[in-house]
Image (cartoon, rainbow, N blue to C red; front, side, top):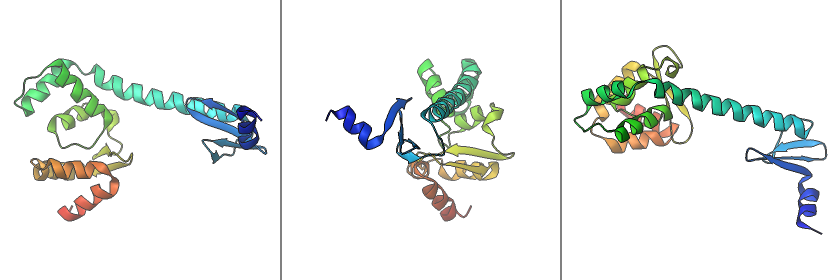
Amino acid sequence: MLFSQFIKNSYGEQEYVFGHRISVSENVVYIDGDKTDFTTLEEARQYIKQENIAKQLEEDVIENLYEEISDNTIASIIKESHDIKVTDTVINEYKDLVSSNIFSIDPVVQTIRKLNKLNNICEGKVNWVLEDGSTVAIDKRTQKDLNNLLEEHDDVVNYMKESKENFLHTLELLGK
């Protein structure tokens, strides 16, 4: 038996779309091994294509929003907050950091994020993405308090970035 026949016998009909394995076995459609409600490969294929397009569009929108903010504006914000030489590399690093939404107490990141109205999920809240992929939203007052308390504590900030549990644990310890 050829390998391709073995795979077809084991997994049924299958193909890869945008890095996802779609397979049909006994009239059940699977995406990456997870059972779905789709009835055909074509439905699953279209679903993955739409998800990929939506994800790419979201990434492009977020990236372009920060690309539209002039480098001069970003340089001015950096100069107001930090005593460093502002280069194109520094500006691009801040654009990448801001567009990633990774938790930060850096005032430059927060000021640049304020320029983008799409960054505010809820009125009066600041949303952050953590390294485990979870999203947290805290009120602006809590953000300000964290900035003041954790300014010299990169180790705590890095701990908070790791996961939602770490983030909430730190807030609990700080009494927020």
